[in-house]
Image 1 (cartoon, rainbow, N blue to C red):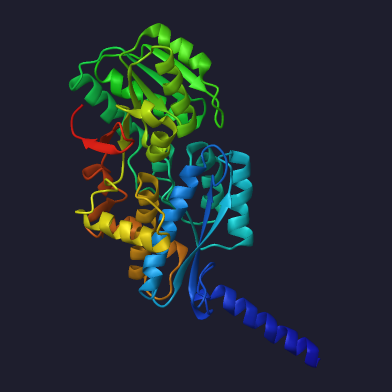
Image 2: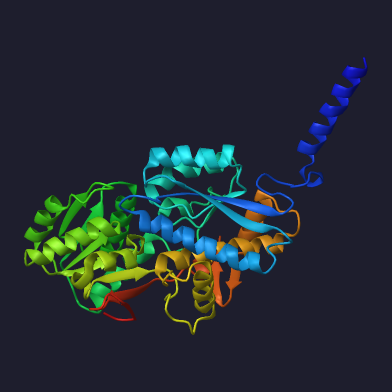
Length: 388
C-alpha cells in the first residue's frame, strides 16, 4: 500500500511538472537554468560547406558576444550544429535528431531550399521555431508557416533587382539563366520569369545542373548558342564558378549575375582572376563598412570568436539571425517558450538591431527586406553599386 501511495505521489509530481512548465526549472524544451539550446542542420562539409560554416560562424559570434555580456536573463545561448550535406534526406534525419535527441529550443541557420522543403514540415509539426534560414524561397513566406522567421529578401526580390538593373541600366534584351535543377533553382527561375514578364520579355535560353555537382558543360553549350548579353545564375559557388571559368575559356563573355545564396566570398575565391566584373546580389549590409554600427559589432564579434575570420556576407547573415533571437528572447522575459518567442517576433514585426531594421509579418509589405548589387573586383574584393 505504501509503495502504491509513493507511485501515485511520484506520478502526480511528474504530471504537474509537465502540465505546468513554468513551474519546472527550465520552463520549456531546450531551456535550462543556465542555457538556451539552438540547433542547426546545414551543409558543413563537401562542395557547398562554406555556406553552412559561414552561417554557423556568424551565429556563434553573435552568441559569444551576448554570452560575454551575461547572456539572456542569466542564460547562455548555445548552438549544436549537424551536417546535412545539402541533401534533403540527410537534413530530415539531422533535424529529427536536433528536435528529438538534442531537444533544442529552436532551429536556426538552416541552409538551402530543397532541405528546408523537407524539414520545415517537421519543425512545424513539433511547433519548433525555424529561424533565419539561408534561403529566399517563396514558400517559406506562406502565412500558414507561422513557425518560420525569415530575415532575408526573397529570391523573387533578388530576381526583380537583377532584371531591373540589366534592362534599365544596361538596356539588355537577351537574358539567359543557369540554374540548379531542384526546388531552389526553379524558385529562382520563376522569379526571373515574373520579372521579365512585367517588361514584356522572355528568357532567351535555360541551362541546368544537378545539385552537389559541377556538371555544367551541357548547360554551357545550350546557353552559348543563344548568345545572351547576360546570364543570371541560381546555384552555389562551385558549379557557378566552374561555368564562368569554362565560359571565359571558350570565349563566351556575357555579364554574369549571381544570387546571394551562391556564397559571394567563396565564389570570388573559386574564380580568382576570372571573377573580375561578376555581379552578385546581396541581402545583408556590406560586411566591410564599419561605419554601419551593426557591421562594426559583427566585425568585432567575429574577431573575438576567431582572429582569423574575415568579414563576409554569409557569416554576417548568421550573425544577424543570432542577434535577432537574442533581442527577442530578452524581450520575452525570464521564462521563454517557443510559442511566446514566435508570437512576440510576429506581433512586434519590427526589430532594430543596432540600426539595422528587420521587419516580419504584415510589416514586410510596407518595408520589404533590401536587395543591392555588388561587383567582384580584380583583386577578389567586392564593390557595392547602385547602378550597373
